[in-house]
Amino acid sequence: MLLISLLLTICFAQQIQVQLSSSNIETVDGVQRVKEEISKHFSDKFYCFQDVAGMYDDWSQAIYGNTNQKWFCCGYMANGRKQCDRMNEWRMVNGNSFTLCEESYTEAIAKGQNKPRKDLCCANDHFQDCTSCKSFVVWDFTVEEDTYGGDRVLEASYNCNKNSENDIPDASECEDIKNDSGQTIVEIDGKVTLDNDWRDVFYSQPAKTVDGNDDISYPPYAYGNEVYPAGFAQGTLREFNDPPVCVYAPNVGGRVLEIRVEPEEAGSQLCVDDLLADTAEKNNPGVTQACDDVRLQTCFPDANSDGDSGGFAFVISCSESCADGDVDLWFRLRASVNKWTEAGDADKGTDKTEVNTEMWCMWGNQNMIGELPEGPDSFKGLDGDFSRWDVFPSDLEPEQDPQVRPVESSVSSFTLALLVSALALLF
Image (cartoon, helix red, strand yellow):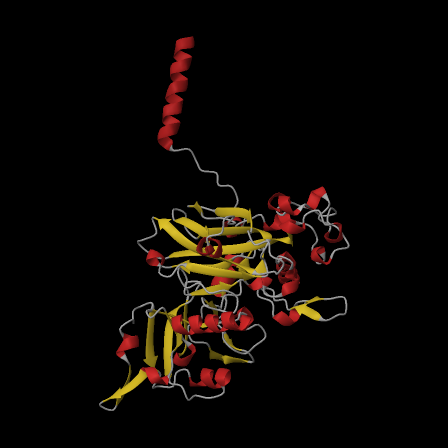
């Protein structure tokens, strides 16, 4: 039965996700062009072109080791940002949309690999759901199994950024998370910042280049941002939710989850939906929908109580007032150190009332220095000051001196007239 299930899953994925290739190119009157079955879907959201001038030859050689493929395609990724890559790297989803994705989240994130980062396919090694999303952003901070909800990775990245003399530290400056044997289990970069001048760094960061060669720039790249204010990732919700922003966080199943979303400009009614709970029609979903037009914050236990870690997928969309244009936004997911099913476990330190997992939504945003258990692995690498994460990107702004404005002359005259009238009545 397991083999049959696996074969059905593979067949399902192949039916809804079709890899583009040279077979989608035809030659008419000596000129190559994309076949109509693909080109009829071209728009500003997805299109392909032939790089006849060799604009991306150096990049192709550095990334793929050859320049054989001259056809490139560009489209929106799951974070709403545009990315371009060779045509044969793209897939058609549901016969009418396109994505640049991998079926494994470790392959998608491409950490430590000299290749572009991609999305996680909607039909992948972990789940199959292409109803609302064609692909997913992989949440950086919970990719490895030993992240225990991701806070230890957030904190390690922030410490590297804080201690570096560079605005954007090189990964070589950061201290990786290691196990008791000294082996690296999580590689750390320094992109998490709590500096009030983060916007200056964000807007001035250089374009993505090939590792080891700053002269070779990437084509338009959706994942080039290296500035995460308070751990928030950048996204753009496109007009009419086409596409929405879709996110998958590995290894957080069964934990208490907090999701925060903040648009660059208030007034857009943004909503977060628990994608897998909705499509699976669970009787006990974690959250069905949460909305806000200024700062969205929701905290809830994931309904997954299975023994395996699993992941959590959610979608960010706009319910109203967003139809007239794109919405730039910032989003972040945090998860409890332990699973909510592990509450009361002395070996994990959850028998203490102060750090009871069911109350993580409260203490997970407070200063808990000196109150965390010292023995369990899940609390290692945490200094206990979770209050640093109880912010949104807009909270991190340069301090401004209070402005003292002179009183308008008309107001002064009116005040003087009242004073003279009052004195006249007295005398």
